[in-house]
Image (tube, rainbow, N blue to C red):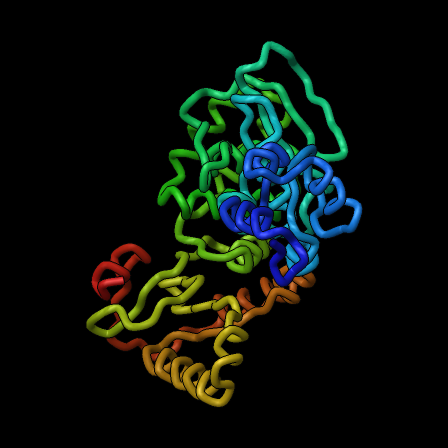
Length: 335
C-alpha cells in the first residue's frame, strides 16, 4: 500500500523510525523489493544523502543549510566504517552548538583507530585519520561524534578568530568550564595549527550564551577594552536583571539585541518591557547600550567606540547595587 506522499507505507515507516533517514538494507529487510527502491530513486520520491542512505526530497527542501548539513553528517557517519566519528563542524552541527556562516561543502569525520594517516575526500564527505584519545569520543542521538571541546580546538586550528571564539565559547558553555578545552588543546599538541587554536581556548567564556555575545566580546578585545563580566546579574537586594556584558566599576552594561524573538509574540509589549528595563537600570546608576549582529560583525570598531565613550564618561550618581555571577544569580532565582 502507498501513503499519501506516494511512498509505500513500509518506506514511510522506515523513514519515520530513522528520523528522516533510511538505509537501503533496512528497506530490503522490510520486504521492499530492490526494483521498488530503484524506481523510487528514479522518480525522485527518495533521494540519496550518502551511499545507500536516503531521505525524502521534501525534507531536503525544507531544511536550512545547517540542518541539511547535520542530516548529511548523520548519513555519512552511518555508511562509514566502524570507529568513525563526526568531527569539527560536523560534530558541532550534531551537538547543536553555535556556528557562523555557511556550513562546509561536505561533512567531516575522524577515524581514530585506523592505521592509515592523512585524509581522503569523496562527494559525500571527508575522512581524516588521526590519533584521538578515547575520552574525546562519544555520540549524539546514536551517531558517533567527538565531544564539543575536541571539536572546538580542532576547528580553532584553521578557522578565523571569530568562528574559533564562537565555537570555543559554545563548547565551554556546554561543559560549564574551560578545563575541557584546555585538556583537548593538550591532546592536539604537535598537530599543525595547535598554537593558533590556543588563542580561542585562552579567551573563551563559559557564561556566553550566543554567537552574538561572542561577536561582541571579540569587538571589545580587538579594541583593547578592559574585560567585562559576562551575563552578570545586578540588583539592589536580589538579582533582578542580567546584563550580557557588564563593567562593574564604571557601571556600564552592554546587551546583545535579541529582541526580535519577543517582537514576534507581542511587539508593543516587548518594546514597553525593554524601555521599562532600561529605565530601571538607569535608576540603579547603570548606563546601557544595545548592539545588533550587523554592528558587532560588520562594524565592530563602532560598537567598541560607543562602549569606550561610556567607560570614559563620569559615572552616574551611585546607588545601592549588588552583583552576582551568572551561576550565582540563576541559582538564587531558581533558574
